[in-house]
Length: 197
Image (cartoon, rainbow, N blue to C red):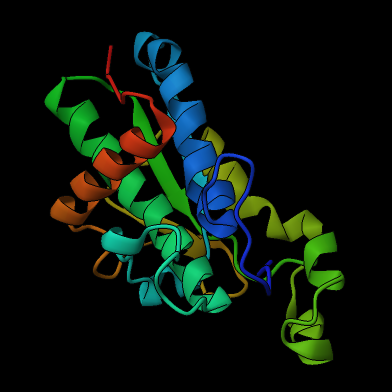
């Protein structure tokens, strides 16, 4: 968990968490879409975190201009956005008859440099964290397993650690109406168009 404690707009004029966790990925996906859709078995992997479950994106104040800024909520909103975007991509890929996939995962608690240097959870959380050697397994599974499907969200068996396990996403991450709204506002603020071809 890397949560920026202060309100900040990046150079694009967007709120920092949403820019880093969603809009940056959205921009890259738009620019790579021709390659992704032309390559058999291509996949786009979204790595998020469990706080997505508390995300509640305010589309009328996407960049927190009108509301009092809440860093944790902004972070959770951006993590939900990642999953909504993956859901929208999968719906569009299927509708277009493509075998391109958007795979979603959360790696659990991993002893990354970000965790080591953060104040999140204190020493107890750091002690629970998986070492990098095992913490990377969920990512590797999502990126390489040829049998993986898009109906599941991949995470460690026990949430913070364990073998990669397919689980069902919790609402609202599979709300296609929310996903469509997110893509519409993402296209508007980036000036890009999410085209399958």
